Every structure is written in structure tokens, then in C-alpha cells.
Amino acid sequence: MKQNDDSEDYTGLERLVKKAKAGDQQAKEKLIFAFQPLILTTIQKYVYDQKEYEDAYQDAVCVFLEALRDFELDARIYFQVFIRSRLTNYFKKRREGRFERSIKPEESLDRQIEGEGGAIALIELIIDEKTDVAEAYLRKEKNQRLVQVYEKLPPRQKAAFQYFYQQKGDLTELAKEEGVNPSMMTRACRSAFRKLREFL
Image (cartoon, rainbow, N blue to C red; front, top):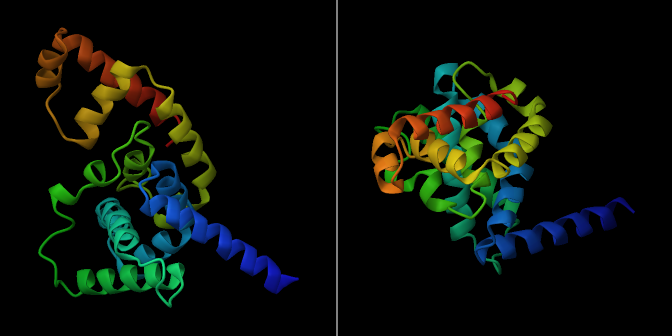
């Protein structure tokens, strides 16, 4: 029975991978959540400075998405083995100082997983520099609720939050584009942050 269960689990994973590679943003989100334990364990193993966890997590998700893009569906290797290998190789090189910096801005989460809900991009906010990896893993359920709260934000609050915290943009510029007062955009951003902060 156990063997059948494992087979069914992998078949389900395979379907999810196919959907994600076809551009299904929700499938990508589900895969990232499903592989969070592996991502967090890898960070904990290779990153010693807790202040680097936030950058390391963003890098890990980018590496995961690049691996998903490169994975061949007819390859004679399990997806989870392929992902583990890519993550391990990346963080070994990162620890050895073979990268001058983390993932380049043009390879950021915003660009790679852009979608209507923006749920995946929000994941980079799950871990901040004051949160250790083990604690972040235990808070997985809370993080899922965080995504739900984010998706329900009013359009202006969501746009302001995304632009300021994820794209590191100037709210004054965004206000000009939207044709509203800068203070209104600032209030929208703060309101969004307060709502989301309750779940961090």
C-alpha cells in the first residue's frame, strides 16, 4: 500500500510540474510551498549568518524557478532529486564565495512569477532578517493565510505595497502614474503593511 501511495503522490507532483512549466502561476505557488521544507533546510545547512536568510530565501526561490524552467519532463530523474541538486550546488558555491552577490535584480521574484494574484512574489516577505529558518518553517500555515490576506487587499493597497516593498520603487512616482496625491499612496501602502504584518 505504501508503494502505491508513493506512486500516487509522485503522479500528483508530476501533474503539478507540468502545469507550472506551462505557465500556471497557481501551480508554481503550490510547488514552492510544497518544497519549502527542502528550501529552508538547505538554507539552514549552508547559510550561517541569520542576517543573510532573507536574501538566501529569495535566491533559493529564484533557483527553484530556474530549475523548474530547465527541468525536462521526459528526463530520467525525479523532479525532487533535480531540485535538491540545483539548490545544493547553488548554496555550496554561495558559501564558498563563488558568487559576488545574490540573484541579480533582473532575476528577482517579481519578474519570474508575475501573475494576477502576485502570491508567489509575496513569499520573499515570509522570512525577514530577525526570523530563523526553523521558526519560519513552523509558521507555514500562517504564511498561507498571509497570501490569502494579500490577495484580498484593495487594488490600490496591493499596488502600493508591491511597488514599494517588492519593486523598491518610489511611491511618489507611482502616485504620479495613478494620478493621485502621494500622501494617499503612502497611506495605502501603510494600510497594506499593517494588515500583512499581523501575520508575520
